[in-house]
Length: 381
Image 1 (tube, rainbow, N blue to C red):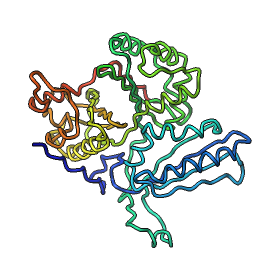
Image 2 (cartoon, rainbow, N blue to C red):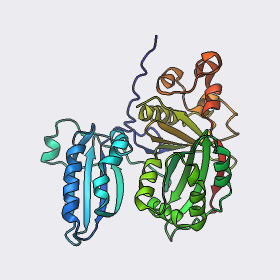
Image 3 (tube, rainbow, N blue to C red):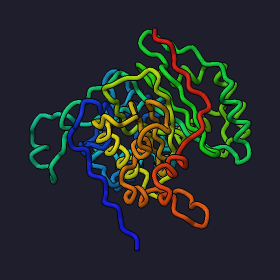
Image 4 (cartoon, rainbow, N blue to C red):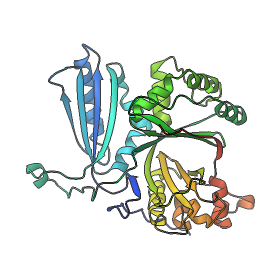
């Protein structure tokens, strides 16, 4: 007999200032999309937007949207949308449905930039008074550390793992300084079977840093070298092919928590949690809740945890005092409720058809552990 795990509850308040980032507090989301339209393509863009708007209106969690055109430069447009909370937006924007839905925009758009914000405060007015349901605001501002965390993930052809790992390990790191306000802080690269995960930490403008890295010849050489091994074909000389690949590869950070104590000897690990179909967001939320609670536990060896999620891929990047095998394996694993975790994960069965959780958290920790390929921390400016 199976039981259904209860849905994780929203993190409706910031329990500790240690939680510097989370999409799970239940508050409304405001999405801002800055669009630069090709000269003369304004009408084409407007028609493509109206088609997209009709489709988005039926997406669960969508509340409203607004299209604005600059009064100073007609090529500059602004799209704002409101969502009940961040998870339904992220589920939609990271889906294949979204990839295909926005295709009509590409031929008329020169550049775009997407910004996402939780609503913290708002002034009253008729719109607020006539809202059909309570409009939840973020309870308190988060205290961040000035670092933006992002990851990319993709798969390579089975049998090519060793060759890909060698290529990725041997590249020359690019100059960490992007400009006077932006620099690369750390790049960590892991593999789990044929899945590659590259996590980066940036101080300053993430988009500027990603573009800076993509332009570096040493990075371009690595990307070209692994092209033959990728399961998803791409042509980096074709802007559309490159855009689609990196859109699908994006693995956003959905939660980050840092303990008060620091330890320069802490070691970095990545854990890969295969989610059951359509359970990726719920699994990430469960990990976020348990990470938040464990941050208050002095026995917890995890000093820093970042959860990345897209579709059914969930990755947790952790800095651990004393190594992954030290202390309580359940705390390092981040899943303190085996029953709830088993309902949301899809680990392969063990010998004789045994369930992974039969071996306890140590067994599951072994299954999630990713192979470290390289971890490079940039020197401080």
